Length: 289
Image (cartoon, rainbow, N blue to C red; front, top):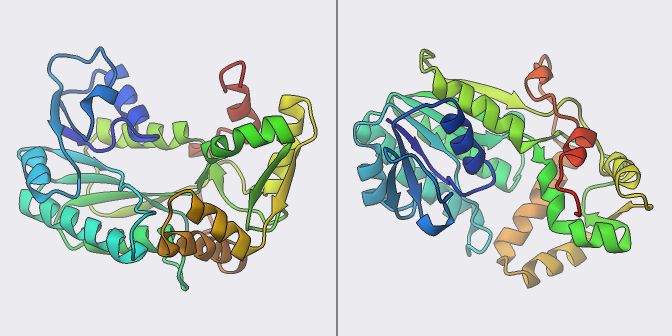
């Protein structure tokens, strides 16, 4: 039995499709809204409705399972962003220990443990510490930023030729395709012969700046596209208007500062395991976007 969290999410949905394509079974899905699952699922898939921060739901889901795919939901509206992240991780960590599940594949953040507050990167590395207190074998997939994060700005990109952030436009950072992340996760879940704990850096084929992305976007959509760096205070106000708490918005400024001034790519990373380039990802977008 393999348990999947976030099976309707950005990464989890592709992990589900990948396991189904390889006829890996049985599968057990933890999902808040089963109506968002694909209509046609094999009859032997077990669905547990609930939240992954509910201890009872986790105990039921992990009972007798051999492996867990864990993708922790973000907590952007929480009054205390990092504390909410740690609380969620603690609930999951206790369930992992109690269930004695032998294998866990968990999504984490790129690089080593941040030396400064780094928003979600700090929360994910704290999750690793909490999870590692159990006797399970772990593979922490330390991922860079997703190309698909740009889809939230797609209307501005196509209509106005611009997208925004608070990182300098010429600052290289790791970016990658979610498809590459899900493939690595599916490979690990398909063959559970691995033991012990290991962090795998999933960073894309090469570091890339937002200015470089803008150039690729210009070629893709046939109009000039520019990335514009916003003042931190203005950026924070905008994301708070979208529903983020002050703490959640500050977490985005913290990770921007971390990536700009403190992040260092781990040397010797095999970047061939996440080969999809930004240009290739753009070419795979549905026509009409």
